[in-house]
Amino acid sequence: MSDEVARHVGGIIHSMGGFLAAIMDPEIGRHAADPAASNFIAGNPQELALPEYVRALQRWTEPKDKDWFGYKMPHRPALVAAAEGLSKELGLTFDPDDILLTRGAHGGLAAALNVVVDPGDEVIFISPPWFFYEALILGAHGRPVKIRVRPDGFDLDVDAIAAAISRRTRAVLINTPHNPTGRIFGAATLGALSSVLEDASARNGRPIYLISDEAYSRILFDGNRMITPGAFYARSLLIHTYSKSALAPGQRLGYVALPPGMPGRDQVRQAFMVAGFSTGNMLPDAIMQYALPDIDSMSIDLDHLQRKRDRVVGALSEMGYEVQSPQATFYVLPKSPIEDDVLFARTLAAQKVLVLPGSAVDMPGYFRISLTATDAMIDRALPVFAEVMSRLTASVPR
Image (cartoon, rainbow, N blue to C red; front, side, top):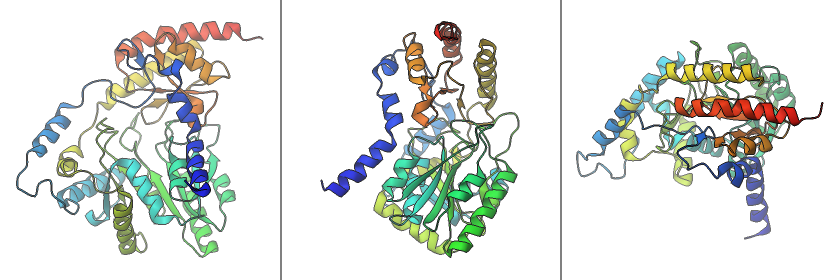
């Protein structure tokens, strides 16, 4: 391995340091496989998959002809169904040809970055981030530029993004609804961001793309609606997945959508085809493509998820935890009662309650709870949260 390659690989590993430290921490993870544990670490299913989801996969597994599992181009009915579903969801009109199927949101993000980023280009991304944003930017040979959300409410800091744009800026990567805060970025914020990017693109003489990770676009609470930057900024690449709405993250199915008005759309489509061949991030497996028209309308029980959110947020607040109620996503992000969020997570883990330390998502002093846990897990965990809060705060010098 050359020194240059070693530095590149080392940089990618370093970018995931907090996440790797958390998931490999033996004290936090030692009870992960214990069925008696309350595991809130990840947005994983804790119950069997939706029966209709399973039936769809079973139905489309049965081959209809000799070419059923052969090489093929994107399945046209899948493109049509995704375009119709997204048009209804976002209130825009998407053409089936502007749906670029990918191996989940992860594959879509990797493909989008490889399409728009040249070596040395800067990509602004929002922190707290999804675990792999910085690694994906580095993997595309870009230069990550991190901008924090506003501390008072976790909204986008559009002024900070504007100040960070340079002549080398090629893309801005945001996540709405936002993991881990649960914030939905509003129309005024996205409109302001669009104006910033339009002005900067004109000033630089080179377009800046907006990559919008919309993985949680259908996991909404309190009647909230999804607002996409694609409604404001034509050069948006909208990343979608079915792993959240169907709660099946191991089945890789998603797409990148080009909004109406995307400049140079034919060239962008061609670039994604090339990126797919060169990276392997495009085209889900044949069965997933065949099943997409069935899967598109499926959803986990959002009312039940909201009831779990309300119960967890209400109980933690009563115990003295500082916590905001998320507008969307699977997650609640309370403040740790002590500064050392890893020590807090280890203390909970000793009683088989597993949470993700905030340092894993660049939020030291916080911890993340996944609402995909079962009601029984929550029943077992709440007394532990109360007991640990009381014990740790009693030991903190005043």
